[in-house]
Image 1 (cartoon, rainbow, N blue to C red):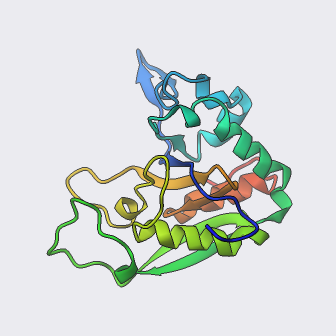
Image 2 (cartoon, rainbow, N blue to C red):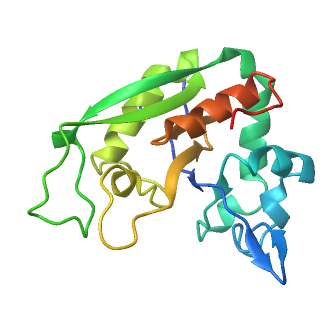
Length: 194
């Protein structure tokens, strides 16, 4: 990424629709979300209590996500929360790379909406990254599956509908409600919209 306000994007944490696992009738967070790293990737119980109703963390398969990078990125975002705003990005269907299993006969929608939550100074660079990623042109430690979220395929579509970019601290979503909940949380409204 060539935006002078931003570092090159390498780590993007996938976020899933919220869910809780149950064992013997007791609910708990997926213990495998952060592999063998820190419990909850280093997030405090208080932070998890605020985030749990909004999204769950997808297992990324790399140690870089397991030992504190996620809470560091979130804490940096919280410290500059007043600079954040929601933006809607329209991506033309022809500019999205079809997922591997997407049927060649299936018609792509004309356009897709992605909801960005970022600092004002990062809007241009974050949008550029999202467009590149949707087109299959990003180089990352682990895949985002953004194109799979935009164009679900197969019998079991992805549960991923949000992302936390760790290197610069911004988030983006295909689920507008999830983005609105995050924006509400960062604005200081602890009663997150349901």
